[in-house]
Length: 287
Image (cartoon, rainbow, N blue to C red):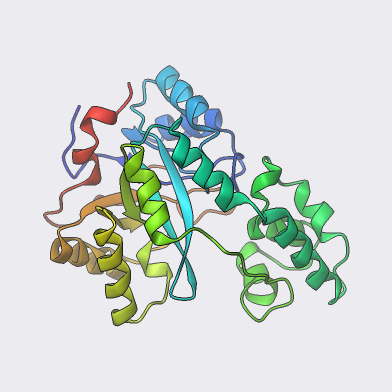
């Protein structure tokens, strides 16, 4: 199998197991049809879809590597760490993710109460209609409810008006620590990757702190080309990967055919002379 930087790898996407709208089987078929050559399903704080995704990929003749995306609290923000190539049955990882998911229901009910105070009733029950896994009810599910019922035109408007800090439906959640998230991934034999670093709006000092602490815990990769990055950010994080000697990853962060900025397999190739993360995953790719 070709493992050079021009591989059409898509190592970041979501299914109904977390906050995507397609099943793992439908995602595998979509990825294969789009020409993806290496695929990972990376549901939020969950690995329950991994065996389904692997089997579906195998049926499509699509090489597969295990994945998840862990929510982390860092410097007052939520940062996401993608894990790739781990054992999805590893007990410490499974229990750690379960603990991270804990509290989402109580948080969701608080979010609904906040929305009710501004005249939006029934948001908790409404959001549940969009949830494949009730343990993973999230802001995205509330956003779909609000769009479907005409409160906003699209998901980004929902977040701007209702679901970010200081807005009526925002409720913070205590996520995993960076140390724990990287430890669970590496302890299960996987590679930890900083997801979409351009999304966090960190100062250069904060970003340096994130990267160096991440590496100090054993993290090895960074997403360079991803659905939320601009062309300028592709270049910036390619330079970051080279500066810190990090493995470069690539993934669409696909959630839905109607919501996502870019489709599975449609990203540009990794820029520059980068070492792709899949070069460290060769012995963990499942065919």
